[in-house]
Length: 444
Image 1: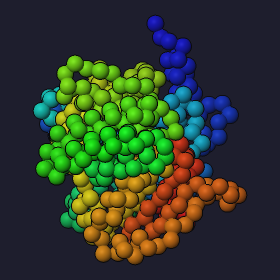
Image 2 (image 1 turned 180 degrees about the horizontal axis):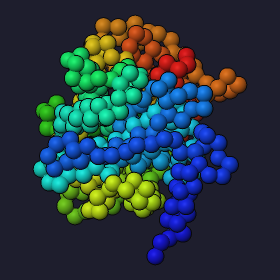
Image 3 (image 1 turned 180 degrees about the vertical axis):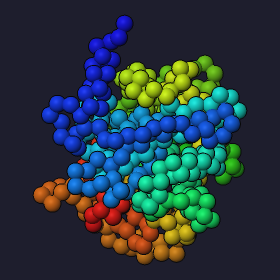
Image 4 (image 1 turned 90 degrees about the vertical axis):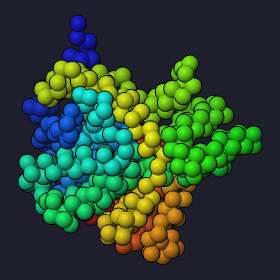
């Protein structure tokens, strides 16, 4: 029997699709398109496009943004869309701070097996960032061939968490493809949000960060520091799978010492993770539950596997939204702790615009760790960038509350987003939207 929630959702979808009632143009669902691209044998990747919905401008006058979710295994078409930046929230009510008012937004469920994307053979799951990027090149190639109206529109990649690591690799491959004449699009930059570019720098900063805000005592700091040093040793020896397991163990120690502080926002707490008898599998399960299953909340899962799949009409009956997400995460375990600082260096050297933004209250990718890897960049202009004075930002001209700080030089920019955790658009929607407009050169 259909639940009241399911019936209500289906009714709202129908009404919004028709633009019924007294909804304004910017409250109605914008023009959309979606579909699958077989990026490799036994794989299909799902994408969902929202055309920009702005009463003053046609979509061709606004940029196109590709949004990449984290995990790996988190669904952009689900979480990013309905929980963060899409036109409707998970209750299918219009989102006031949707990015669709400032750009067309392309959500993609990647790596393959994420969200509505799927594999037909377990050997087809991506195991490294190189495969993730090459898969996306196939999808983007098909997208720009079929949607020729977007070939000249300014194109940006925005990302969150592990999505930032994927975004960096994809941005570099995209730049090379355009230079070689293999891709026709107007690529203008990449934005790395609370990004897993240097996992080790995050882990090494957890102890000092938590201690400085009174979430660890001396004994707790000692325990977290000792655990982090084990991660450092494994990374230095390039034992990346071991480093992933030790990273999980470090999180367990933090969880115990802080009484369950949330890794996504230090002002909140999370319930303890489940226990599993097998020691190695315990760490993978804990990691999955903290960093991927978190993106598959029951209400969102009911929405995606119910009314949304009915609306889309292209999802195979054998595919459950999020059904392969744990497999996605496990297959990427060897790649998880590998750093990607060199990729950012290559982007800067290629004169690609790079924006870094981070939530002040994030723990998993705390700002201290982000600043640490930025200091390791080999970019010749880094010293001058670092010496610049940051500038305060306000959400609007009438506001007197500082919402963020930022600095920029040439093709590098950094935004410190205040009062935001790991999911910046969730906590600070107005500031996130302002940042989007600044990055895409719609305002200064």
